[in-house]
Image (cartoon, rainbow, N blue to C red; front, side, top):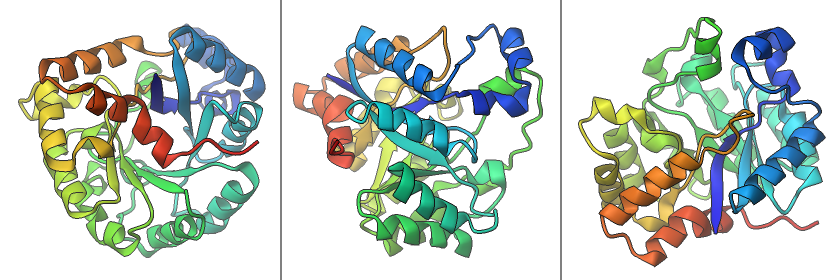
Length: 290
């Protein structure tokens, strides 16, 4: 069984500011249609690859409603994540409303994208919202940040990597020990720092998503990354993710195969593999009641 902790829900509202149909034509990607239609397509795709459940990420700050529609349509298959910019007015109120009304279960923060420090008081306001709703996680993108769709369209990405240091999570993670904090892509190049904060804070988990091309910065192989992560944080705090996003590509099986092969190479047991590929996700996000 496979659960995927990192899939982007590239909805129609996601493409609107990028150029809508024109952008899709340039990319050669399928139009997503309604949120419900896209949700149905994802269910069929997950079935084809024998993926049981997946986290769907609303990948722009104003698109939580699309993921909420998908989750409400297939509650047994999807867990909803949504992007939030804490620098916006009443961001905490927005987060509170999305969680209460839409049933989404993780708040996604991209400090380098929206240019704010994790130790900003406005970020603590967001953690207060998560802490007030048990079962809500906070996803914090750290390290290298590159948005593939923007690169393909030749659009600028004025991000500031200085705001993406996992060590900046230390104090807030200690301050909210009951809030699960997900660092995707093993820290996306800041692997050492991600391991340090996870070692110090038991509520920090790492997701394994994407091709992990960041390893070129640290001189490690993917098996070595898994070996070191398992040695530091253990198998209970690693979440498999594919970083799948658009159609017709669909679910990126190659990512699962590469990670599975890496775990084979280091001799990971069946129990360790089950935790990474499925059990940890189910423990963090139990199946919601109908």
